[in-house]
Length: 436
Image (tube, rainbow, N blue to C red; front, side, top):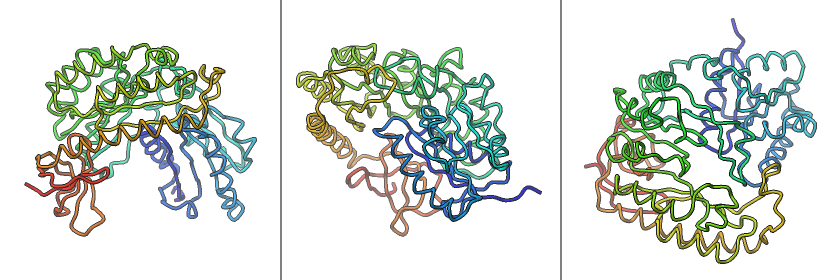
């Protein structure tokens, strides 16, 4: 009989890391591990890392420094680092922090059981290869446990775009798509266990080519899955937003009216320096075509301010694009160098104070638009998929079609059900209403 051990996994960054963490828990389940929510109880601690944010690696080293104390108290504790920082730093992690037993990249986590065997023998385990075998095929089937109403499902990994600021092509590798059969099998399994909404994930998800009709073809196949009520996808690149996908937004009832389509800048000069392969006008015209297909679409985007060489006029161009497009939701960041990327070599870095001023101005505008988008929902009736209990007794929380968080008084048995809610109030980052 396999000895029961406890695994604590801390996830940083994107939704794909959330998905990967779930699969790592499952991969180690066959070695007797069950998940715990507290690192103090754990026999193994895994940090599933992200390399996108500023000083990501240093934050991981700081966390490892804290965890080293737990290992001093419990010498049998195993500590591992997974994800994109693991891929980028590799052996350096073990050199800088000897308490680390295991380092595994995002393409190799299906090998965790073998790596766990090694660390139990008192050896170090490092695997940051890009293996030829399909990690999804190699992973054990998900245990047939009940799931919450929503789930992420990775369909595509890696990126071939090589934006000048981005480490993804180096940490996740070239674009690879899972077969549509593989995706559909996993989707049906999720639905059987209670999932009603699936978000398809990819670093460049609309470049998906595991179906002969691309991502739109996969969406239409998922549309036929009984019990699946909602489909979303993220993150997309404007260059891969084809007509079939635009049409699907207008005609597929299960595809939600929400789209995350990053532009990064409104300046053609900066877009060219970023190697984004589109102009501001091309992006705006694309949004017009998508909104013609789905007029009620809520648009989300990403922005980087202070990219090397960005002038006041470039920043003004970004602000103008935001005013013209209008975003119901957005993410914005100051540019920070990523070693090994082309932008890191540029000499014309923008002063940090200027970056901060520009970010504050942009975020003020985006926040105003987000507030307007939410307030426009007041008085409307929207469909809400309830996901969990709220903080207040008798209250449930779910997401609207437009991905707004919605609170309403409702019985617990409505968790997992999609119901009509009339919106009565808008507060920061959420809406509240009453059941219709």
